[in-house]
Length: 488
Image (tube, rainbow, N blue to C red):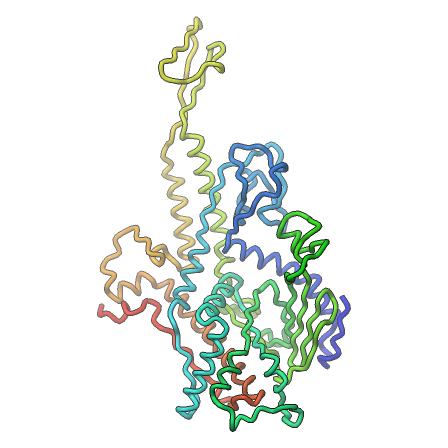
């Protein structure tokens, strides 16, 4: 890949290092973060080919993403690093058993998102002037509403919970970008803020795009001495085009599990954002570049939960994977046992031709062998230790995630008077503690996004603000709603 990074005028930014990030670190990060997303989504995938699948009693026409965590004695397959559930190598002499997947991760992540962004929160300006506070709050509301409103924040929380962090790029519309300059003498058609109507300001603010970047794309170049400072932001990914390519493409073949002469066109995209310039490459060719008059990288980094000395935060999915695998393994074992024991089976000894004799009412088997026997076995039997183990695995997932079935409305035992605020706090203590921690990290990220948006409008001459005017406060509602206001 031929890179020309001279536009960035940064002697510490080397083409060889950016190329190494794309060729070496990006594949590894994609495999790691892709597995986290697979465990959250647990997508159902068709098997590669019916002709390749052996004829087995328990074989289905599909597999699920979490099957890669099951042992080969159940799935009959082994998976190499980076393999998806639709791939893998069949193991000789091992037939596929009953596979049961119960995705206990997804509903826990969704419950966390509901507690964090299930209700509308407030963005309150801290500007000194009351009219200015009202205007700033209206501007920020217009920006976030234009980018999805509540859905934007829920998507942010899902990406952060799964991957451990989420990045947001603040992009100005082209008509605003041409006015972004600290030196107004270079403006071809400056926008005088003094006679600009506030309706125009709101329309201009609504054209600012907030782009959430999923972790597999992110390749940030951090400061050598401060892991919290982004010197240059690189993202690399494959993009589907509204065109048809004859040879398909790497991503297209990977998604379809086969090659075809007629596939949707897929191109590799590399974007580099610096404090003074930016570039975009497609298929290793420089397509666009320009200067960034903001003087800083327009990216806000949000950790799901803080993790010292790491760019990535703590993922809610990663710490549940091993327990999810254990749960699926035991559920599959139980399903195989139930399948085996659900039907009566007979072992006949000393009876000739018994294999041709049907087992049905009114049938009689005769033999002259006095030592002949027929033994009955099978039938469902209780396994208390197995049920107890499954229950303990679920309890372990409750403790690790902080999300109990009560959050999803599943009441399995008497919980006392839940109309009491104290009772609710005690019942949801783990979930509330995690929610409060996330309110700090996501709240800080939203404040940074708001400040960057106001800075863009200020430097474009649309709505002037000072650094003090760009300070906002995020007020989250009570996660338990009005019930917490009741008397204990």
